[in-house]
Length: 131
Image (cartoon, rainbow, N blue to C red):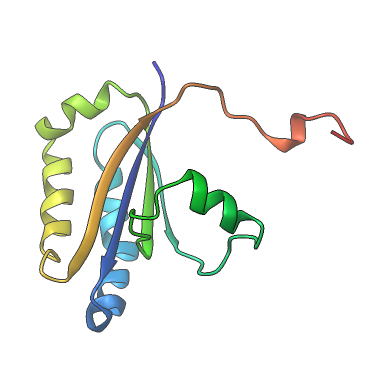
């Protein structure tokens, strides 16, 4: 079975940001990981102004700029893509989603997307030197 990555992105009202980050980092990730099939979880914060200058033309001509750049992203590694269809039946997932939705009044630009692995993990350590 292919692994799956769940990508959850969001913004939070600035006045709630510290409390939300404490909740998410200290509680929510662990609650989500209690869901059967969830293997790993990690959060990230957007780094502003990280695109090299020569990307500006490529991005402007090739990609849509209408997508919001949410400040926060969480990645969850699931053991298989087939798990996505079964998530609603797990109480642990219901608990995790319910906790997250308690912040709904302060959240903006929330998205959750699931991606199925189509290659094995590749690492730089396995590449020949000088390539």
